[in-house]
Length: 510
Image 1 (cartoon, rainbow, N blue to C red):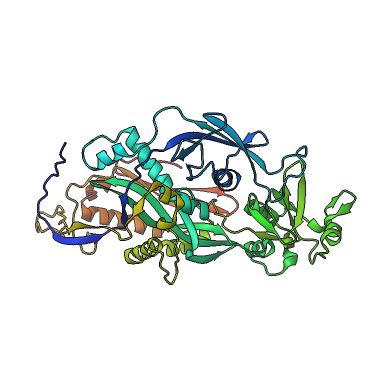
Image 2 (image 1 turned 60 degrees about the horizontal axis):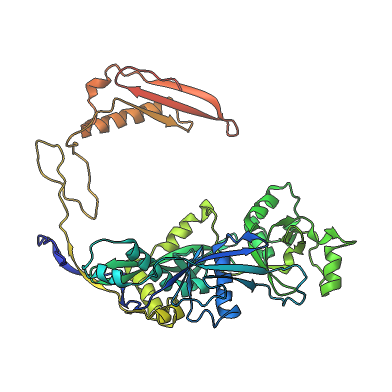
């Protein structure tokens, strides 16, 4: 079947356009086998995609490296694709144990802390190959069948797998300090990163790459971050009571955040905050005395907050001064409004700068604000699949079309308006087919007097009349009703004024 391209009129100025897309010059030639993955610990499924990916990565690299060579690609949920049929002990299924704890398990009868299980089961049905995808981009097949879509999805996983295991990510994009970083304040900072998407086109498969931005927790001492959030400098400002708004603010900010510990190795997830942590009592002692005896550490601020970590069955209290916010953590909550301008400014880059960042990442070069990150040629997943990516962005033939003229409803001039720089002026123009305004309203949240509002309404009507949107004769019997009501915002003692204007003589009380 041949592909017919519709001819287009030669309008506009020809122009070569450089894109942010890169050609996959070689597709995989082998097949992929599909397996269903279930990860669980303490009898419960693991919900966090990054934690699931870490467990499966350790299973492949450290627990059974021979079995999982060449490496499998995992979607972070329930599907794993293997470039060969895995010789599982149970035939088509097997359950593996993965110890994620830093400490070796010496007593098999002891509670299994940090021990997880990964259940693999081969999915019955056809294997995934790339023959139909090749036929689709060559025009030999016109339908994007489920097999084509699955092949594209597997390619997507292969391309994203290595950086997503190395850097913090949201699955579709990953983020690294090397691509650019800027402090926000309040314990947060901005990182740049890369979005990647595999797209089939006529005759080739492309990787579309763009620059992305993420809000990250700042890697710093928990005490310093807490003071930054409260905009304080003295650590004694963290001597807070549980009912105080400052305590509730910090509790909300730190919940679910991982910290590393100053006095020993390991990483812990914050479950909550504790006031006056140094004097928190347990097992005939308190936190202050315990750290002095066990670790030889004298707390400088025993009366300030601490964090609750560990499980509900084995709760631990760690003083704030002994905790550091762990690195590579994305802030996934709503960004405080005061940081939005900085976010917009940091994210905004010219097309030339964006392409320079992308090219630097794909070519392993070093620029002023970016180092190698995409690193396609060294990805073990792309090497095993036999995928190669051309390092130069593709260019396409384009045309700059002439700006269309705009015709208004002025019968006298009849001259079109030509926009300049994407905008145009409506002064001395009327709409081509104006529609009347039968009713409209004004809601006033200020204390501006009635005379000022009346002048504003008059000017608005006059402007609409010039554009042809209203007819002055329709407002001969205009009645303007002002309704004031106190108590809408009792905390501000603010009145609300509502003007309802109708050309049909209706009044509306509000």
